[in-house]
Image 1 (spheres, rainbow, N blue to C red):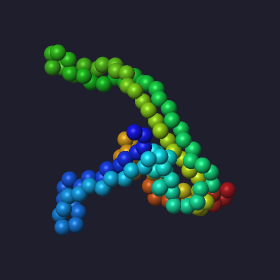
Image 2 (cartoon, rainbow, N blue to C red):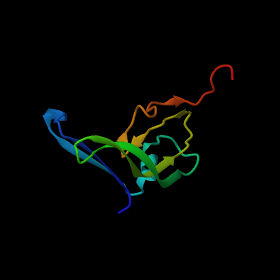
Image 3 (cartoon, rainbow, N blue to C red):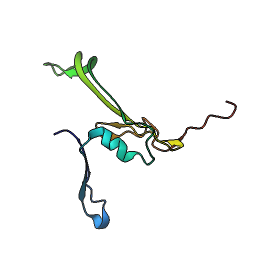
Image 4 (cartoon, one colour):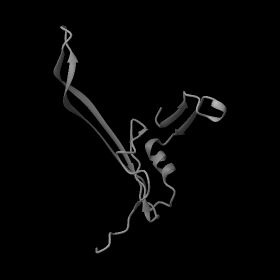
Length: 120
């Protein structure tokens, strides 16, 4: 079934009263609908979607039959799915996710000013 489901699960009992819980968010339109959900302003254009697939080779340590770590070249599959949307707001917010996990160090998650720097 196409779409995107994000499940947030509290396995440590950090909720109210120490309760554990789970919350699900379903976006039938997939990453495009999720992008629209995240955007707070009115759109200037439709959501732009970029997808691609490929392979790459990587050398990784693998345990051999003698119990030794041996560098071995493996082929990995790679898939990307990016959704972008420009809005009427003055500030830009960039959010990055890998396997639906937020990656705050990969991209700023707070508004980034779109104003030109002084002297330009």
